[in-house]
Image (cartoon, rainbow, N blue to C red; front, side):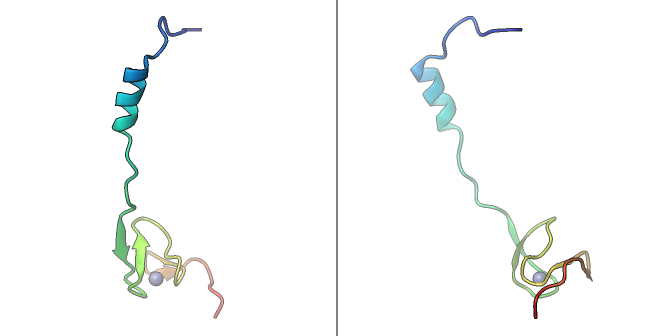
Length: 59
Ligand SMILES: [Zn+2]
């Protein structure tokens, strides 16, 4: 198994960590209930995806 030849230095570790940021999720309004929803995901508010109800919600 390949093993790193050298220990990762503090500077290298820190400069790599500096480029790792938390990104806010992309939210788009749901076409069914107009609440913010992550794109390409089932709507958590109404349970709709692609114009049909996928998950039944408690009413
Ligand atoms: Zn919805």
